[in-house]
Image 1: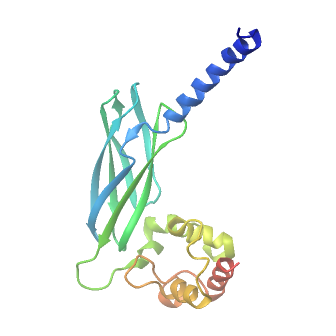
Image 2 (image 1 turned 90 degrees about the vertical axis):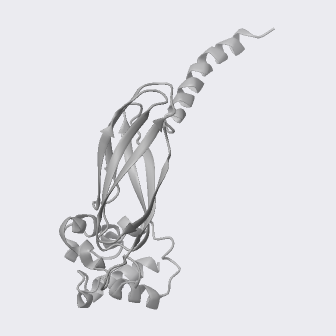
Length: 221
């Protein structure tokens, strides 16, 4: 015979399990979670209309979309989505100064949860025109806000890394093993064939030698 204690425990536990299950399910409300943008031409503005299918059993409303970088703007094209139906967001990406493979995250906020659905957009930018790619565009205009922020002159070490490097290199785990010479060369003069420009003042960048040395010291800790 099942004891009263066991029955009471079951009654109290089931609602908790159901709530946890529902909350977990809301993390996966759309497919796909990744979008392949293909090969894009450098120096152009590209529109990407991304269709998202509602895989839940409830009506969803896309409230807003935000991107991880200022060079990409996002807008809701179709926000009211029935179960099994399709919503749509449009991304407009400025590829000026970019080269090589990229991965951008898009936060899609719905009325289903306070946590956004994360869409990852991957692709490659190629340069087929004449002349070099102007990677230094990140130091100017709207790109500067994401890649440098304000008052860059006063920043050093980890604070400088978070302001000028984190947007592209994140936690820097892949950079920690590089030699001092490699880091100095890459930060000061840039990396040929990529979107990494030279950050040294002598290369038209915003950083002094002292600031670059502080970045190298932080990455070598």
